[in-house]
Length: 139
Length: 334
Image (tube, rainbow over all chains, first blue to last red; front, side):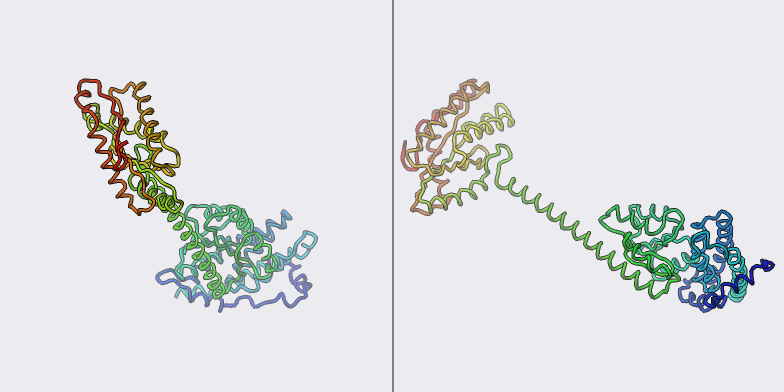
């Protein structure tokens, strides 16, 4: 996906600094320690694992929706991933999802391939950070 | 409290579930609108639901709309869950029947406050429903009790006439009213002749038939406004209102005629007769119903004693008709 030549150019075409965020705010995850149930598996680890399942499923759904030009499914998948990303502090992923969800009609989809590629890149970054966090917690 | 979580975003769902469990709630989790609707339609459905706006199957607002249409006595408290940017849509969500909303990613303090508000509403509704149920039961019981009390305490099951209590209750009121109005009344006391013999010879069910027939004859001899009662096994008391001394013989004649007519066409193996005494209620003398009955009773016994012995005749197969011919009216003899 990094080889997608349009990516860099398209992203900078968006030219709105509000779209750029820190990839992950780890303090969000740390906040869940307070609701950790005694005797149960580490909630943060469990949430990270759920997110690992969630990301490929939603990205795949968005790719499929783009192929079928199915706006409703695209918005729905973006909405879902925005929710889980927001809940875990994956701010940049959540922000790109917001952009995709707000694309609306097919005529405005010119940036969609770039946005999806960027989304995949940011998902990898976020998952990498979460994986490190998971390792730390499992020690 | 049992709370439904309907959320297809598994991360949000897990956070919600863990948070609510931590706060002591029991959670039911679904990831689509169909299952959410099914859960909320169960008999032991959660009373509070947190529904994601966008879900596979049926979306949150539509779930709200369908649940509201069912108009349950214990309504579900529904909180719609969605992203901050959709806040404007919340009006539509609330119009669809949601009670409240929560934005994602949700703030746990806000979640707590909103769930607590929902809990209070649900508990309030439950206690109201419970109170209404209790009141309905209490009203039902009271109505039943009043009905039973009225029937049991004032009327006689076998004949449908008033019973002793009914007679005393009504007569006291009627006599008081009659005294105020200056109207004279007659109080009769009657005894069905030979009931014991009928019971012994033909059985108690036949005895009951004899009592019922006697009651029926008394009922149509006296006026609807008179108080006709069966005060004991074979004893009857009647208050004839607005009746004077000289009407006694008219009433007695009518009663005799009615018994005669019955006995003439009856296929029963016995004939019915009454012994009867009567007293004129003294307007200037505040006699109790008890006193009046005592006097009428004495007169009745005098009448009974004056009759021929009919017992032997009954044993021989053809009883003598009892005669209500001459009997005393108070101290007078008619």
